[in-house]
Length: 274
Image 1 (cartoon, helix red, strand yellow):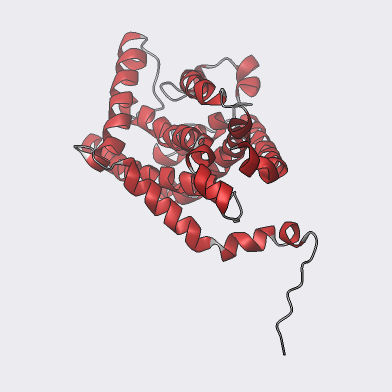
Image 2: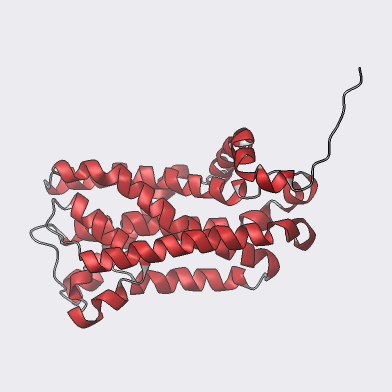
């Protein structure tokens, strides 16, 4: 008896999320390749993942802590407060920057083979997550250096890592789909990341923002994430502005829905446009 091949209209759409699991090995391959290429033929290799946040911490500590004399959170060293903000911001900015070009950089794979395209930017975010884990190790080294030991709140750090991942993936998918159609975005994204670094409370505490503007300021989804990280790392000495956290979570949920929706809407045309 001969095998019968049945072509079913719309099957690919209905089984899209199941296909993500079926192609999980491709996800592992892409993530490992991107991780290997990132530090290939560099003199100090993975140490770049440590040097960049350290230099940012030093600059922000001097500019905002020493020159501008902005307050720290409770009794925490200013440098440690800054690094607690750098931790989620580095994940967010690296994921956004790398994911935005991920489809364009894999144009040969995209144009020749079928697989759920969502795998490509998510694999890039996985590489940013590795840098995040390296920075967590550096965080504990800094806490030991300053003699500022964590309490039970540090146990919430894995959950907050998931939160910053969800915060990153929505905008990353949206901008990735735009970058395939409009290549100008490759020049816009570095500007947006640089601008976001200074308007987000990375080098200073969000408590310096006046109460009348703080809820509006929290519409930046990174604000709530950074506040939660500081609450976890600084033994609760950094208060979480609950209305602002709720606003940040709502914006995160919206961008997660919107990013996936726009990515899936544009996915069919990626092979033609790329």
